[in-house]
Image (tube, rainbow, N blue to C red; front, side):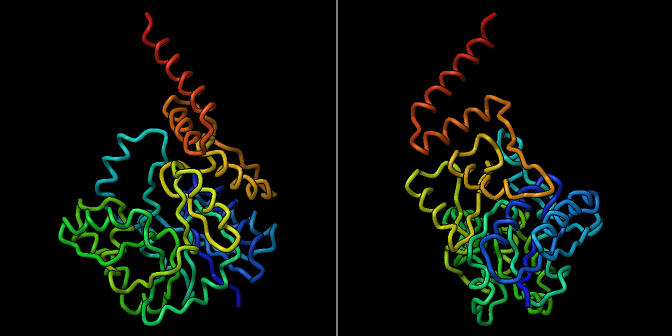
Length: 319
């Protein structure tokens, strides 16, 4: 039986999803069955992903959804952060559909994976992982301590806080306990206390129902991490899932160069679309790139970019 892999994406995330899925196909010898969930308005993007996967011999089933089907989840504090943050990915309300995928995908067990990932040779181990009586398996979040503290102050005590960018889901159990209704009730209780919208709501709703998985199933690599740690994370792709968390992604030219190079290795394997990097167009993006170069200990390059930024700012202020 093939392993069901679920991706949720909109038009912007179609190409990153293609790259993630290609890495999964390339690095795993087991049969995979892809389930693609996307807004009806982005049908062309969904068709593009399905067409590309077909050229790699993969089966893909599609599940376009209407705006009426989209759960209404408040982004909470993220609303304010997105207004003041420049040069970083903005959240799409498409992510809210993650809370409902068990109601959509006609499989009893599947692996959900975000599109900002690369997938190594680990899917068979992950899919067969023993969850015991718990219906969800996930890896603790990179910033778990911080998020637990925020939720505890709001009156929601959690022993663990999990990243929902990869979840092993025992969907038949989740449907039996009406998990979607539980998530929506948790979202209502959380109100404006959420920092990561659907992820907070899933953590509060599931609480004791999530099995902690080994970190290799969701290595959360952030663009400004120190070089030694990040290099080790990227090398771990051999038998893991590398998840490019944070608001800067490896298809953006201002991400750290090593991350871009690793991502492009798989982007170049696309056969039906030509996947290009987003170019640097603003000083904010250039500033982020300088910080990324510092993180990779490319100090001369970072210094040159900082000088360029200063010169541009001076030029703008000069009458």
